Image (cartoon, rainbow, N blue to C red; front, side, top):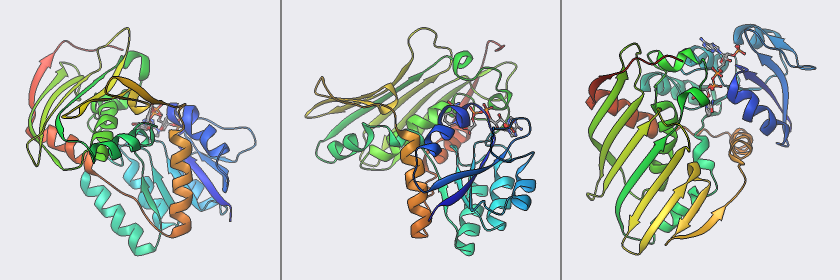
Length: 307
Ligand code: NAP
């Protein structure tokens, strides 16, 4: 059975990743776009999700590629209209709104899929398996990138709910929460806010796992030159490194896996499977750690940021 799909929010990630991945996923048919400004040749476009839900009966499922602020109303409207929903990360602006969506999806018998694309990076599943056979001593996450390069002119990331440097940082947390064999808890957080912005440009976090393994995390959006998306895992049996956002896995200093990116193709295949199985997949743990950082974090004011 082919599933008619509507895509809402035709911004950077929708164009870079969602459109090609949908095109390559059997059993999905992109049949409507919800965009305030953009259109796609040959695909009916609607100015907002409410109009789309009303006027595009072929749509059975929607993907929301809009900013997290405001996504709750869109997801709720889609579920109330009987559509399955796939959410870009982070799944929402607050934990409470996601809990409400989970309840609504369940009550209506619909699929709700909160995606974490970085968990689909090639090295993540093998790293998870490896950590179940090794004794972990420490974890260090370094996620440093240039905000001007990756988020040019995106005003929403600097507004409350936009998460600031946690927008990329939550990708690292989504990997860590997937691969560690036990839960971790935040102990300490320093958040650096530009004087003119509502969200942090950098964050230093210290977690500890249930059995006491330290997990240190550095997020920084002021990195120019080479970019760093590394998770270093110190184990009693030797070092394990996930680099380039999880796409490269090195074990004991030897590169074991480096595959081309297929994160979004895997997400769409999973969405199709979840719909066919009548299941949902919503793990809020990465967002919960971010919420904890805002709860526990000490705020520092740093130099104003201009795009
Ligand atoms: P973006 O380039 O700013 O695109 C977001 C799109 O959402 C806009 O182009 C706009 O599309 C629509 N939109 C609706 N209401 C909006 C509002 N009030 N303000 C701004 N845009 C609004 O952002 P993005 O980078 O694609 O990110 C979207 C989501 O994907 C975020 O949750 C982000 O964390 C996630 N994501 C981004 C990346 C990345 O590399 N950029 C990677 C993975 C995940 P229309 O004009 O078509 O309505």
